Amino acid sequence: MKRSHALAVSVLVLVSGTAVAAHAADGTPPAGRGTSAAAAWCVKQGGVAQTRVPYFTGSGNVITPLGGEREMCLFTAKDGSHIMIAADTLAADKPTLAALAYVRKPTGPSSPGNPSIAYCQGINGTAMFGNRPTDGGGWGLKGETKPDKVMSACMFGDGSVIDAWGLKYHQGGVIRGADLTEKFRASIPGA
Image (cartoon, rainbow, N blue to C red):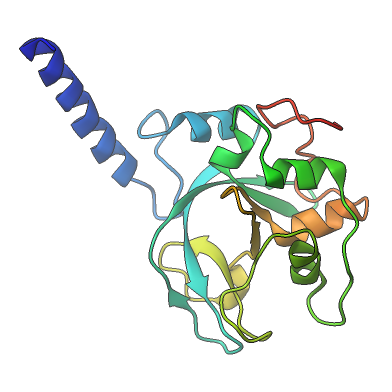
């Protein structure tokens, strides 16, 4: 690689890395800066790209931030309902397990506990943040202090992630936030 080309690539990586780190307080990337291709796809589909972090909520009113972060795409309807999906899940070039679960609406068990978690587990996903049924958690904006602002999500073996309640409601015929069926970049069989 020529020195000038290597320098240009290094500068591009440095500038991109800095821009990705610069997000608004609500986790939304600044317009035109630091947005990944997945975040850009999210916005093109009518969603809001946000950086969210995982939180452990347990069964109390205290939440504990966990390591890592993920770019999520949030769709909010006029009625205030919403659905969240990982931006890379929405923008994947090939079908993901979360996309297949959303579009195909497989049957799953019901539970006297949290039906969204039971459904997620029943279709081979996980939304658990501990080994007790009362252990909870989900994804929230950085610095969140209120457990009710953390959104539970169903994660599948391929790493794809979708809002657990949005998935459960959609399986029952209710659209929350937006109908994602035509928003996936990949062609989803059964759509």
